Every structure is written in structure tokens, then in C-alpha cells.
Image (cartoon, rainbow, N blue to C red; front, side, top):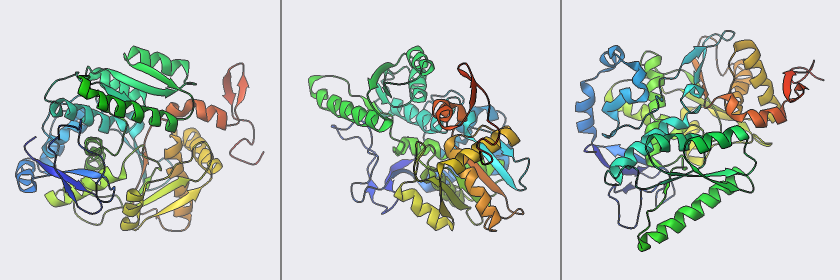
Length: 396
């Protein structure tokens, strides 16, 4: 990894060495000064010389877009990729709204934008633990993470709520994960995972292998993989910025990652102009409640955008509308971004003559159980047949 020089806090710019101290398994995720997200930084002079060989015009003409996110090798660390074909997801034009497009991250191999960061993290782990591929197992919170662990030939310890569906149970077992069922929510699963990871770290003194925490979306390696979404979006738009981004709440995609990509592309001279205004549809309460962290909110403010607070019903209306009218099954987070489009367009903040991109972070089917419980579906036996007349689109 010759081009990486250090880690840098996204807030205060404090620098942290990439060298692994003896007691640590992986680089830290957060700045020791103010808790900001740590970003991988490169020798930019060397990176410019390396990237200049592949100016955007040459990169666009490069064969093999099936290489997905790894087509941006000139601006990524040097390692042996662990890949399931993530990246180069479609940019779909809306059939009803002029200028509006959907970047559908649900088309990734595991149905979520998370695939980018997890693929990069596991690839970097192979270099970081001395090339001992598969020696250190990983602790994970999603079946997608277990899939990538299997691709990397690492044992996965997967922490899931006890009420997981039979389908998810089957997938976890087929990926070879050791499943730890937890009574309670995903947040309680996270606490159990953190406890076990810390316990195994202490057990290193007894000669046991540590568990690597693959669950944290803020980890520098996952942020580095997530930035490829920014490169990809700009390339798909002809190496220009969109005017506005409609962004999902939560951490299914990392706004910090994409902002880092914009910064790097500008430094390399690959893109110019004003960065897009970022608008976030935030679900304040309910089973789909989600919000951005403070670092992401700072980016929203710097972009000239804002956060729109929405209720769950408004999000569900948008989700049903896009499925019926556009054939796109958005995730609840993507539907929250879609729900923000109406008031933004109606108030003139997003104009028809502008190019706007709605980022859908994952496939809607991944939230199928929760959506079945939330939508008033008319059923025959155990299968839904239709939305009731009036249903969620018009008053009952």
C-alpha cells in the first residue's frame, strides 16, 4: 500500500498513523481528539501522477465495466480484491419527473451499497494482517457481510435477532457463518458483538486469534470502498456533478465516503463545478426511523441542502407509488429520499431543468418482513394479493 500516508479526521484534520500498534487488530475508526470519522489519505503528488495515466476520457473507454467499483484502481489502495461483482449499479431515469434519476444500489450482489465498503474492508484486511488470509475471523451484523467473509475464506460470527426469517437463517448457514441469536433489536445485536470482539481482543494474550469487527460502517476501509459510489455517479453523468442529491437517512450509504470522492476528483482535475446540494428525507419515528450522524449533517449544511422531517406514512406512500408507477422497489430509506422530492419540487428548491439523483441504498425486498407488517395488504392465506381500495395511497 505505497500511496497511503496516514489517516485523517474528517472534522479536525488530526492525523493518525496507519501503522498497526501491537495491541490493535485494525486501524481505529474514530479520531482520538474529537471522535470524527478517520479517512485514508494518500501521497497526493504520487496519486496525481498515477491517476493522470487514466484521465476520465480514457477511463470511460476502458473495457470491462463489469469490473465494477474496482475500475477505479488508480485511486484505491493496492491489494488483491475480494469481489462478488459490486459496483457499476444502474442510473435509472424517472418516467414521470423530468431531470430525476435513481442510483439503484440495490443492484449490488448482496442487495445493498454496504457491499462496496465490506468488499474493500475484507480486501484490505488480507494485506493488513500480514497476508494471513482467513486466519482472523470476522464479527458481522448482516448476512451480506457473511457472504463477503465466505468469499474471503474467513470464518464469520454473525449476530442476528432471534426472530430472523427462515430464509435469512438458511442464507447464513449456507455462507458458513456461526450464527449467534440475540433476544432484541439490531442495536442489542451490535452491543453483543462489541462485547465479544473486546473479549477476544483480551484473549490474544492466551494465543487466541482476535475477531475483526466488520460491522462498523465508519471504518476507514469501509469508507474507502464506499467512495466508489461517488466516482461512479460522476462518471455515469459524463464527469459532471448533478445539481442535487436526494439522500437516504441512516448509514446504509456513507455520505462521508461520497464527499471524500468529490474532494479527490476535484484534486485530480477529473471534475469541476459546484458540488450538488444534498437533501435528506428523515423518518423521525416508527419502525423505520433513521437519521444521519453529526458528520453527515455538517456535509448537508456545507452543500447548501437541508434535512426534511417526514412521517412513516409519507414514506410508505412514496414507496408504493414508485413501485406501482415506475417499477422500482425502493428500500424504506430510499423511499424517504423519494418522499422528500415532492415538497422540494413543489417549493422550487429542485427544478425540472436541473439534474437530480435519488440514491436508493438497498433493495426493497431486504425489508420485506417489516414492510409486510407496515403496509395494509389484503391477503389470501399467507400471501398478499393487493393493496386495499383507498389503502395507503388515498384516505381509507
